Image: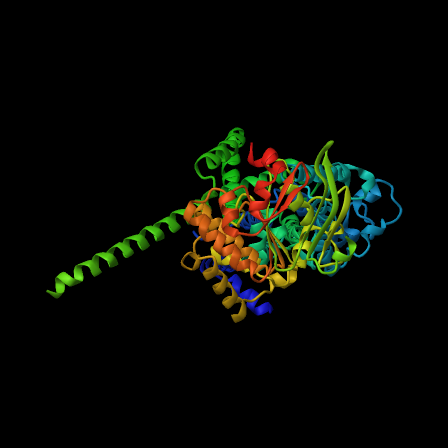
Length: 387
Length: 250
């Protein structure tokens, strides 16, 4: 059952994409660790972390594409799931600091000592164990998505209304996490991390490993989503996107199909956030900013929604552009982003990958038509040749 | 009236529903027998589509009873459940999955387990394959199987939707204006197709096209202002003075 599911997930594009991502997981860390700093192919450590960050963004965009591109749910709150995964990882990293914090308290993180708290809040228990934190990375965003989706999809909240309440959700979380008495470090968030799984988080080797982990997570998620969208389930998801009432009158419980996709997608976003935090070294409530969620939509649209490779390419291209631009002409970046979005909407409504696929399909059709034409020409010519 | 329930396939009694004060259905009652093909006519706003909405669970009636197969109360169930019970519905505007192929449209409609996990791990079996082939030839789309539904003509989309309903294997089919926008040749073929389908299940057809209904040659129910005006053969109904005033004469 599982094997047939996995086998179906591999078509040529996905195989190539997974191979490229896994190749990067080996090559980039190798070029960083095994070459001398003055070697022409050397990848400096800061770039490894930067690329690692792009990969986590790509995973977030892929997660959004599963619900937006394939099911038509335009979530404008996906950064919230990303941030929750990030906070779960951040809490683990905070507990790893132990007595090495500025205040030297073996149990309480610095900000709690500063706030004069005497004991650890209950929801911080367990986060000293990696397995627990890793579980929470998927469970917390997954639970939130499940509960939120349960109510929204059951009440048949659709289209722009759903988008608005997802924005409201991330905004509410933003305000909540800003509060000091929530117990998540308030405005400053969680930072000053020291170790992950016993390895120094600043070390070159750890950075390379985090990059590789991000790439592997992206590759696995790509296989999972590909299996999902290629199964009958995925076809129904697209059916819900295109003709929801038809799906319902065929006897499918549309709300269950949406809920499953939304929950899986939130879990993937949580994993992305958890890999993001150790690579950038901080998580703060700014990650819940509604504008962040909207940026994810832009990456996905630029790359091509409804394709699996599109959001990955979109996230890497837009964020790569952002890094280059903000270094070279910092004041123009927002204009460039806005211009990019306008241009893509006007000239590439299906995004980069969607447009390329459209060209390929048309060329194939043209070739087929030409071949048919030629075949007909031949049969017409045959009697003449026989004479 | 109550003793009729056990034998009838679909039983509506005194169904009323109003939207913002407008009575869309006004104490509507009728019965469909197993294996019956029934045509429903009536002017715009007579409540034909609302009646279908009630039967398929899209709208809840304010008062009245709706029973399927004797004792299944349809007013307490939602669309998906009613569809799984065996009531298929074709919309007025052809509604198919445009970005799927004709084959995939039928595969999704096939009467198999409808759950998330059942569909996630679904594998095409030889029986399913044969069933889809059979439906493809019934609705005359065998040579278009790998084309996207979006590329079909209007009439072919109507047939594909009828094919999807067949794949669903319903006991009762509700068909809303199946020949709207079809050519005469397509209309005639659709009449043959529906008669074929009605051999194995009950079909309710809502139509405006009187010629088409004559082709079907079945019992006709004329609705007006939310209730039944006349019922009987097409000649009987079209001779009825009230029907002429309300519908045909207009």
